[in-house]
Length: 261
Image (cartoon, rainbow, N blue to C red; front, side):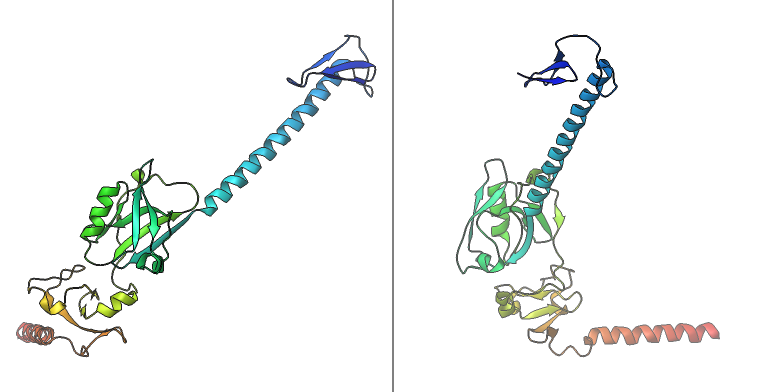
C-alpha cells in the first residue's frame, strides 16, 4: 500500500486492485478542477496506460506467433528405393521420420530426422495419402515398386494429419528424373511422355501392359534417350498413325467430291 498527496488530498493506492481512496470527501481543486473531476481525470489516465500496455502485449504476442509460423517449412521430394530412412508413430497421431541413413536416398533428397510426414504416395501412385497411421503408411510405401513421393513438415507447430484430405499426385510428365531413375530409364510413352524406369526390363513386360499415366498400350512406347530427353528414332509418327491420317484425308476428299456432284 502506498500513498500520495495531490492538491491537499491524500490518495491511497492498493497494489493489488490499483483502486484509489481519499482520506476525506472535502472538495478541493487540482488546477482549477473539483475533487470529483480530479478523480475522473486520474482514473482516465490509468485506464489509458492500461490500454497501452495491453495493446503492446497483444502486438508482442502477434510477433511471436508470426515468428513461430514462419519457422514451419513444407518440403516435397521424390525418393528412390531403397529409401534409407526409418519411420515412427507420433504419440498424438501421425508419422515422423526417426532416422535417416547418411548418404542414402532420403538424405540425398533432403529429408531429415524429426520431419513430420504429411503425405506419401498411394498404392498406385496416382494420389498422395495423409500419413496418419504408421502401419498403413508403411504398407503404401512398400506397395510402390519405384520411387516414393514425400511431403513433410519441418519446424513450427505440428500439423493435424487427420484433417488433411487426399490430394492428386504431381504429374509424372515433365518431372525431372533422379540419377538412379535416369540409369534405369529405357522407354517413353509417345502419347503422354511418361518415362519407364522400373527395375523390371521393359521388354519383359506383358503385352497387356499399359501406360500408368494415360493408359496407352505397350506398343505406344519407344526407346528413350536419357541425354536428349527424347524418344529414339521418333522423327516420324508410327506407321499406324500415318496410315490412319491418309485414310482420313481420303475419306474427307471423297465426301467433298460426291457432295459437289
